[in-house]
Image (cartoon, rainbow, N blue to C red):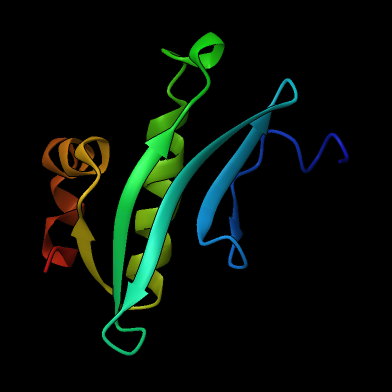
Length: 97
């Protein structure tokens, strides 16, 4: 993985997750597409313990929500972190189904 790829959130469509690699550690926000690909369900966020508290989950949530917005997808935030992120960022509340 190049230095440019590390520290950049990417959508791994094969594994249905947004990913961020930092210091060789993978953080991710998992999702499921539903309703004939008109809805995205954010299921869970994982950040390695040694990377917690650095805003990584927020970066994943922002990129994932911007993706949903750009594709005009309805959002179902099952993940408690994404749910709280949306509460703190009202610009995404209109996406919630």
